[in-house]
Length: 224
Image 1: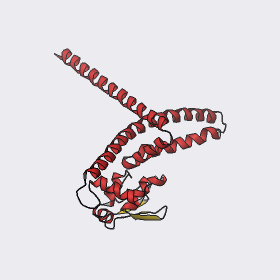
Image 2: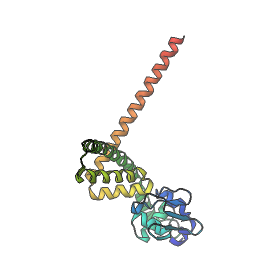
Image 3: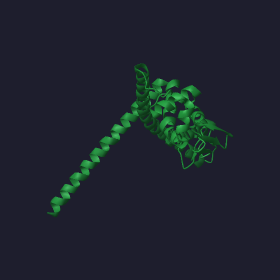
Image 4: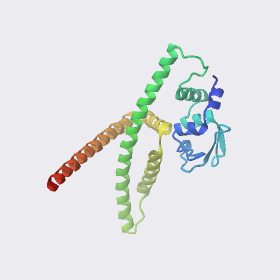
């Protein structure tokens, strides 16, 4: 099976969903340029997409390449891995199976880390935004113009949070890997924070369940 054959056998809307593009009907977001609206149309019959804001489009492989920032060959490999096939249609040899397994294991590990990173980073951004808004309110209460050193980062953090909150699937994985490439220590620190936040939330949930169960038990005793 060639890359073109594979691209013709998949629905572009399904590919867009796998890439985390926030598909709604036959529309999705242009996450590769930070687009927030559903400006991209998806045509399953033609296997094509078109971004009405940027005035550009293409086929399935073009969409994968645009989202993941990779070459057409790498887009074909991603699509083949996603579908669990080899591009020539023949059974994979031992080397190909090992390489495919290695890539899938790496993707699974990074996807797991990306979920924790997203949680940890969102908690950090929410705390940062809360402090910045308090400072902004102080300036406004004094009828004073807030400095650019406050409003600039506040606007940037708000945009980053909105993008991160909506990121899913391949888009979240791509963002995570971009941040790891820039600062791996800082990024993986938020992965650890995310794990800790989730563990803390789970512990609180377990504690709440126990308290409710005890309250119910006592209520039954009182009613008896």
